[in-house]
Length: 106
Image 1 (cartoon, helix red, strand yellow):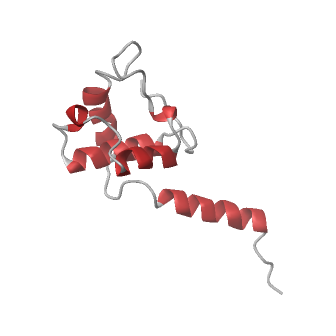
Image 2: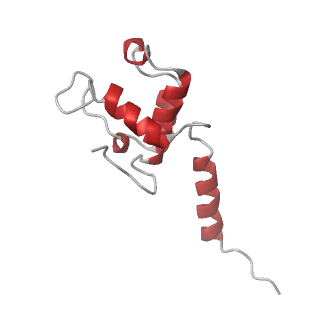
């Protein structure tokens, strides 16, 4: 007789699959980290006009909402291509507060 997958394991596996599908499809997190440091940290550092922002500032779902609803002033994103934004979103998503590898972006 085969053993059934324990409910807790099944729920954990389902949650992991669901959250990994939310990130920006086609985003390059390595390039995103470089772009984040180059373009975003100007305003989003300690004492910056936009307040300090790191990947750990938000959860994965919150980062997806920021990019899906374009919750950022247009001035800050005007020089970034759609691919640049996907790359930054992927980096932030991969290192969000609730990710397996949270990071500050040092």
